[in-house]
Amino acid sequence: MIRSYTVIPPARPIGHAESLVVLRAERVRSLAALTRTALEAIGLFSVIAVLLLATAPGLRAPVAHLGWTFWSSLGNDAVEEAAAEETDAGDADAPHIGQHVALSAAEANVAAYLARRYHVADDAVRVMVAAAQSSGKERQIDPLLILAVVAVESSMNPFAQSPVGATGLMQVMPGLHGGKFGDTAGEVGPLDPVANIRVGSQILSDVIRRGGSVERGLQLYVGAGNLADDGGYAARVLAEMGRLRMAANGGVAAALAAGLRADTHAAGGFGAEPLGSAAPAEAPVNPARKPDNA
Image 1 (cartoon, one colour):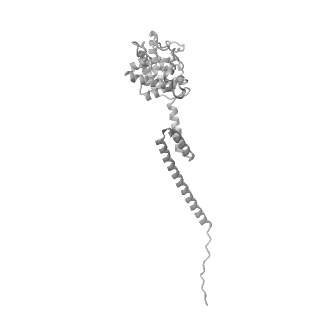
Image 2 (image 1 turned 30 degrees about the vertical axis):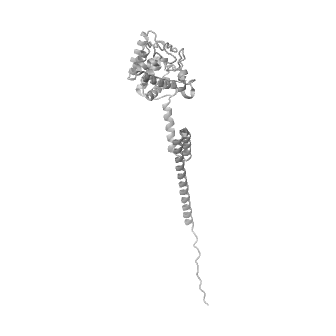
Image 3 (image 1 turned 60 degrees about the vertical axis):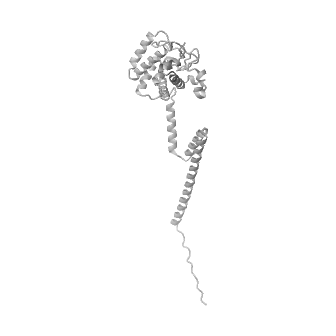
């Protein structure tokens, strides 16, 4: 009896090159699976973040911080650069004493006028000018009006205080408006030049709107709303505003000369001593100011 056999050839051994191809294919499949999982996690995180932001406003800041941390952990350079740019923009919007701020030509002229007229360091005045520009834009009032109020109220002295407690550059009443300074609760804020200008500008904007005109608003600001005469306060502020505008247009020397003439012919009123002298200005005494001025 003849038997038949099927001969099965031995399997061909896999070469080194083919092994590398198989290994690379497995790695690609693993990487694709990891990428898909990561994208699914990102999508889920985005949905949760949107839901939290939409339903719990108080969680917006923590969620934003968590999102920034998550993306940073993935090495997202674009997010990190955007965060840095946002921080830089925030610093530019909030100047502080000791910081050298960049001003336009007109703003630099205003700063030069105020520094020379009121004997204040140029860098400090530049910060005040920048703060007035920011507050004026926010409150939709002329920054030169804000600076004119600062000049008449305190002669650019951030530590000035009146007998009734009005404090700082714009002579804000901490007892009435301390809450507007935020975390400082009216204790340190009124002495901070930028914070004082911010709060004073808010008060000034409110009284102008309430009074219906700049002149009436200034009377309310100084606490003379119920008086027959504000003692020339509004006129002094508007005159100083005119000199500031003159300086902004390039006439710094002419504005200084006009200010010296006004000081020479002044017969009392608000603010500091005549400013043509080299002596530093004293804290202003504003007899018309009332505790309920604004």
